[in-house]
Each structure stands twice: as structure tokens, then as C-alpha cells.
Image (cartoon, rainbow, N blue to C red; front, top):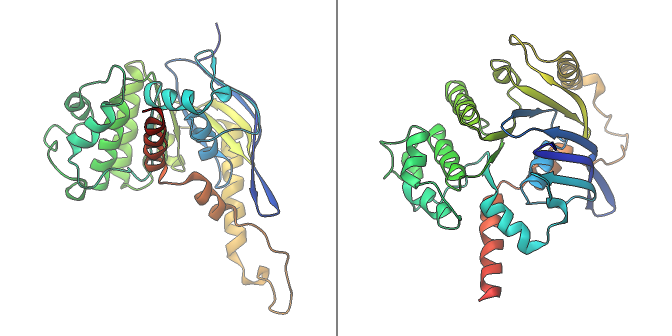
Length: 294
């Protein structure tokens, strides 16, 4: 029996002028149907790029990606539109809610383009927002807005939810509640893949953790009794030490008279590549294609 999600030697490069950036280099792993998996790693490791490829929002340079036996890395634009609408639910870090629509209307809008959508009200009740259906995003807390975004992902009744830093803009307590909610959805049969920097939060749950570094899978294992797999912990601790060393001493700063070779800021590049307006682009691309077909 084949895995539900498969990445085979996936490589992704970006061109920034004359500079070539390897966001992913030979990334390979498998995830079974009904599994919950957390992807961690330092900034610029390729986490968001990986999710965007799986979510049908970005293409790969080399390799193969399969979902439930179908090679999505070979899909054309029309097939990717269908795939995004019907096969996956995507939760973005910055919610991407439409400000002049209520919570219920935001979820209903997403449900309108699905084949067999979940009732929008039911989706909001599942995420604990039964009393906030008629509130606009500005009337909701950050955590509540993220719950609306999660309900929107649920509305298409997809077998898989992909979550990119779903706790990145909420407080610690709400972060815990969102991860618990994702865990309950997984226990009900939904495959969940989540990217996060909140390593301490991840350790509260017994889950599989895939660690990326420099575009490669460097560790893959299960959290047990609140402890990260040895290899994952080693890489994440090394990242912490590197950051501390980088900023601990002013002696490492370049002298004014020295001209250093210019380098691309990987954190800045990662922000450009991940494009937190992805949901808007999603809708615009799909709307353009609908217009072409009319």
C-alpha cells in the first residue's frame, strides 16, 4: 500500500537576479493517510516552500510529489485549480479573511467552490465559534480569526489539512488550543501537516516530527513523553546556539572599511517566497481561469 503523501527527491530553486537560491534540495519523505505530522526547522530551511508545493501553489524544479497515488507535480494549471478547490484545506499564518464579510460569510464563500462542502455553520461550530457567526474579522481576536481560517479549510471536506504556522500570530494559550483542535480533527480521520517554529508547543503532543535544514530532511521521528527525537533536538539546539553566537558579540561585526561580499538575506527571501497573500492569489488565479473558460 502506497503512502498518502510522497515527496521523492524534490528540488526547488529560485532566481533572484544572478543569484540562485536552493529552497529545497533532495527532500524525500512519506506520510500515511490519517497521520499528523509537524515540520520544523530554522528560517530558510524550506518549510513553507514544501507546503506550497504540496498545496498546489508552487511548482518544483526536480523530483516528484504524490497525493493519494496521483502525481500532483505533473498537474497543469487547470488541474491544480481543481486540486486546490477539492483535495486540500490550507490554513495560512495571517488568516487572509475578507474584512467586510462575517465569519459565516467567509467560510460560506470558500464552501461555494467545493464539490461536497461541509455546512459553513457546522464548520464554525466544530472550531468553537458558534457564538461568533455574525462577527466581522475586526471584531474577533487573533485566535478567533485563525479558527475562522481553520473552519474555512474544513469547509471543503478535504482528506488533508495543510497548516503553515497556524499559531504564529496568537498567544500561547490560543496556540495550545489551535494545536489541540488540529489534533482532534486528526483523530476524526483527517491527515494534518503543520509547519511551526513553536518547538516547545510541539513537545506537548506525541506526534511525528520532520526536521528540515538547508532544504533537506535531516531528521524524522516521533515525540515521546514530551521529548523531541534525538536528531531533531540536536539540529534545533544547534540552530539556537548559532543564533546566540551570531548576536552575542559585537566583535563579529564587519569593520566599516572592510567591504564584505553581499549575501541574500534568507529570512527576507523566505518572506518573499512564502507570500502571505497566498489566499488572495489563490482566488485571483482561480477567478481568472473561470473568466477564460466562460
